[in-house]
Length: 245
Image (cartoon, rainbow, N blue to C red; front, side, top):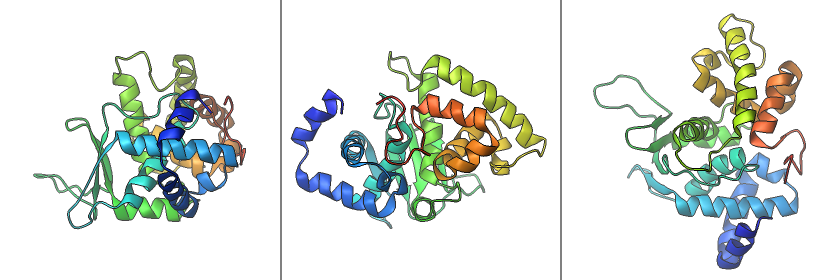
């Protein structure tokens, strides 16, 4: 465990840590599969992300602690092997009671990343479904956080980007090949929505990476491996998925 989290561990109450552990154990399959030490590290990162992010909800829904904890876990799951443990641009999360639309638009959304407001918007029923059904490669929170993380990486001016430059370049080579396959109808493991553009392919790839890792690795081994190194983890390795701790 890194020094930062050892220090945070001293300040977070046992009650808070137990609450996160209880909710994550019930709803997050990835968390349940971790060994004890990694669960402790995951909880600390989850608390840190929850505390460093502004959560707001539709008045019909009301802000509930389990909502924050479960949504935060999707971000922590993606970034568990990375140094970056929070969002600096898209650090406002608005949780809707139902799918929504914007003024002067007929489009209905379950989630989106809004660059104008620096927010990630999520419809809670779809977030819940993404965690309750954990093997269909459909997880709204992972999908939208994937967008937010990649956009923040691209636009960051700090010395702490999310991804290693070389690893991202390797991923992009295989991602472009996969995008062409999907658009040509030669698609096995991803849903067709991945062919929309390279950003959507990244989000769909991460959903599949965590919820159907074996299928992904079998059908697209090069792309799967590139994501393993990009995120510094391999979810097939249950218990201890991190490549470099």
